[in-house]
Image 1 (cartoon, rainbow, N blue to C red):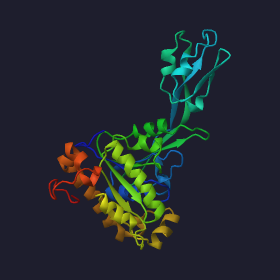
Image 2 (tube, one colour; image 1 turned 90 degrees about the vertical axis):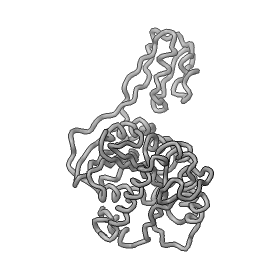
Image 3 (cartoon, one colour; image 1 turned 30 degrees about the vertical axis):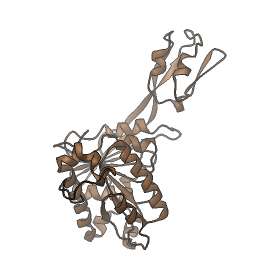
Image 4 (cartoon, rainbow, N blue to C red; image 1 turned 135 degrees about the vertical axis):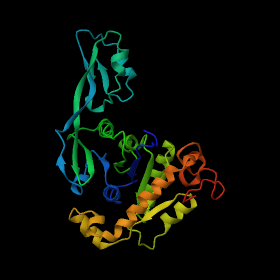
Length: 316
């Protein structure tokens, strides 16, 4: 999924919940229009509360392949349990116990079994739902109750990224496996934070993840009217661009509580999100940023600073 001439994939993420990640993703999709908005927070999807529409087809059931043991062929050699890095298999008294909730569906156990006693069977993990409204196609995953393995469903949601046209991914909060599954192979990451000690701490964790993945990124500060300038100081010292600042406006919270988008309820905020989208596009249209110079650009990777204007980007 790289930066393409036919599409751009933007992930909106945050180091913690409650920073306004979904607010940014949904409003960005609204001002862009003709875009696919994918809710990858499959444990608690909520984009549909703000951009709802008519369902498009039946929900797609998503399953994970887990092992099933044929006891008549199994000799209890434990090759399968020794191979499994996730402890989804255990051998007790020559009998294989399968803990499907811990299985990552790699299929390795079936391949290493010398007796061919293991086959893979589908285990349902959730559904993917698609709906359309006002030029925005919303795709969301809904993890089944009691299922602990979110990444397979995240990948199923991402399979709906169109081959042409832009896509915006609303990532789960935090820095765990579902977040990494969401961010992989995207073109740009918008990290949403708030000017608080907790916001700064979790922003630093999110920055580490994005840098490890080698993705270009910038920061949006929500509820920015604060005397706490530690987030701004950190971004300045780490050469991380602050792409936008959303004021701490009570009217925004009131609109949110009614399930209304900021740009619909308060049109004066529309230019803020239009400019945010324009800045992201401008950055990714620069072939140096999209390609080999990304690793050395201090705006994105915290590398050795380059001469001002060397990349000719708005934040370099």
